[in-house]
Image (cartoon, rainbow, N blue to C red):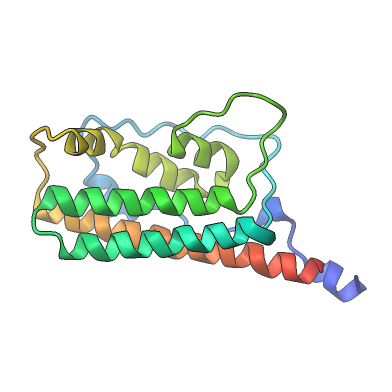
Length: 185
């Protein structure tokens, strides 16, 4: 690899999101359900490494495509609960895309099955997003089980907008992983 390519390469653990996409908007945070707990950020001594190579990069783009389809489906859904459900599933696919580009765990420690916990642990860059979406997890569970949920049209629409912002950040992140991988080859 040339000296120029080495100097241009950003360490994987130092990749950052654009400031406008680094976290949910203030208005979105104000609409979180009252039951949501926004956990504090925990400092991590060794952030996970990411790589956009091979099938993992392809899987990430596939998940982003599914996320886009789900978000589009949410726009066309009739009631607020269904719009919210589709948008939440789109956000989960986005989290999967970030994790697919190569979140490397340490050792054989059992990982949580919760996407937001894994995203927070493996991709600290998305910590604010993982906390935001985790705050909506109980609402999503209630909607999925058919329970009556007090979700206004404004809440569902605002949530969909934030999911769109999150997916834009994910696309940027996955694209960075791919660009870094290409420079390494």
